[in-house]
Image (cartoon, rainbow, N blue to C red; front, side):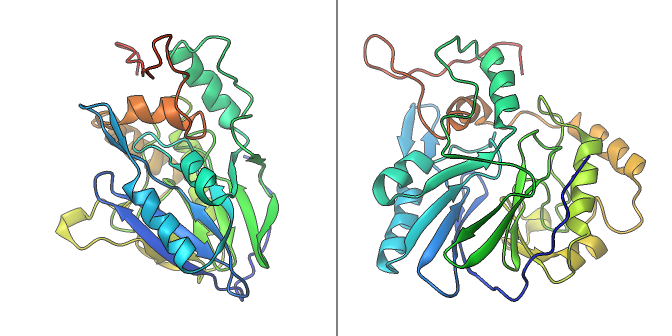
Length: 297
C-alpha cells in the first residue's frame, strides 16, 4: 500500500468533545481549534427506529446546541468512512449551521459496489458528488489554525480515512480500544491484510498521538471509553500489539469475521450514508423507501 509520510503537529492540542449514541455504541466528536472558534464534527449520527421506519435527530440537535452555545464556527463535517452500523446526520447539521461534508475519495468504489447491490440505477451518482470534499491520502487542510491531515487507512472499507488534527487522530472503525481490538474486514471491499497494514501505519506515528475511537462495545462490562494513544495500542491491543505478525492477524481476523452477523442497521445505513446522509429520492407517492436486497449481503 503506497502511502504518504508526514509528521503531525503535536504542539497543537485541540479540544475534543465526545457525544455518545448508546443505541449504536457510536462516538461523534466536536473538535475545536485551540486558538479560535473554528471546529469540525467527526461522524455524526441520525437515529432510526427501523421497525417503525422513523428517523430521529436528537443526537445531532445536541451537537448543534453545543456549537451554538459555545458560539463556534463549524467548518467541516467529516465522515471517516461509509458506516454500516449507524446513519449520518451530516446534511441536517449542514442545513442548520453550515460546514463542508467530507469523506475519502474511495467513496466512489463504495458507491459503485453498493449501487449495484441496491440496484440504484442511473439516477444514483457514483462519483462522490454528494459530498463537498473527497480527501486523498496525504491531503492537508485546516480547522481555523489547526493543522489537519487525511490518511487513507483502508481494510474495514476501501474508503476509510483517519483524520489527524494536531495531536488528535480520529481512526473511525480501523481500531477499537486496546481491549476491543480491531474492526471486521469482511464487508464488500474489505481486506484483513490491508487492514493490518493500515493499522501498522497508525502505530508508526508518534507514541503520544491521541487516538479517538468511533465505537466502544465495553468488553467485559467495563465503562465506556473512547480515547487511547499510539503507544497504548502498540503495547496492549489484543489483535495487533507488538509482535503479532501480518499472517497471524489475517488468520485471526478472517476466522473471527466468519462468526459475525451483519450489523442490524446495515441496510438503511449503507443506502443513506453512501449518499452523504441524504435520503433516496421519494417515490411517486411522495414517500421515501429503502430497499432490502435478499440473499445478497
